[in-house]
Image (cartoon, rainbow over all chains, first blue to last red; front, side, top):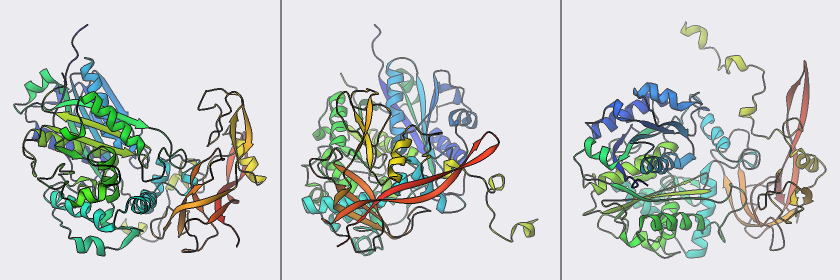
Length: 397
Length: 171
């Protein structure tokens, strides 16, 4: 049997995220343009596989069979794979897992993973209304469940009650992520800053969340290239960043079957992390930089716990200790994360992958010194599913 | 040309006066479209029900056509408890989806150790903002939701629908 190939992330780019005066295809072309700037040697003919991750295309962009439309707009002619994939907020991270498998098995050589959403419509009601369609329609959406802040507010309330987490600790996450994201030119809130006073004094969205505890919904697109080590070396002179391990775990739909004792425990994330660490032959201590799914400030707190970067229940104290800041134990969301870079669902995972790629190649805007191993994480489907990918400057032996 | 369009907000031109199932927040509950129609018939009789596996005894929620534990299709309808306790709750003032009046109140409910359904994230109705507290008891409640048409040959049949939520127990 032929030796398994090694999958590498070559580079990538994003469109401007935000409330955009653009269609989903405009933004996909912007992301391709940014990806091309990042990998100057890359030509359309180099790409033999395409995965487009999107949730709202179809409802919002009238593009149900999306992949061939993306092929046409980006000038591609894939021969190994050409698919649309949807796992809501984890779409392009899921696509990276698929691309890894395709490359390691020899089916594909160079896969373009893209993610894109057009969230904002001519009338504002449609965005929240469509969110009802991304959950279990007949059971959860008919209950009015689907718009995330109320659900995550209950998670935060329970974490505060069980573990003593405070609003100040949660605000520390938002403030830290602004110190990073303010310098990301394509971020939804790029150029903006946030103080503790502003964070704690903001208008309430859903108690206990103020405005800055919640990530925005964004229009946007991202594109990354995942390739075999051999092809990657032909496309770039930069150091190789290997996809070492992945894990993805889902247990339930939204309203019933929650796997934890309470909403403050996320055993399904713990499991996804354990699987990814095992495949990557690493432990949480090895990770130098992380991109976790900070859809809300409390999410990052709980993710640091469940991924094993601190003890369960100590996430609040961990973030205020400076652990997530530059020079701390695990600088997290160093491009601003969802809170500042924004969140076009299907595009977020690839955006995280780009930041980890840059960190491990030593060229991030907020560079973690000597970063060897990085991790990306998305939750999706209102915390029904968790997706973890671990990268390293060395492949798994 | 601009003048012709400025008068009023217009709807989606081709859909004027038609029913669009894709945009409907309520389920297609009728037998013509749904094998779980007995759930909705039971709702109309005031019952909160689901499917129990005759092979392995597992009680699933939501109900299904097979048992998600053993994949048997030998199922029976059983009743679920109609009272629950509020573990935590949230009240949405702004940003509730179209069709849901504010405040949209959601609660994480517990049905107790003996219940086959341990927890449910459910909507609370007939409740003022600030009225419901953690630890309060709530009860199952059924209400009418809008009907929809189905084309049966050249005729149009109207399907009446109900849905369920929970409300505070009368003190």
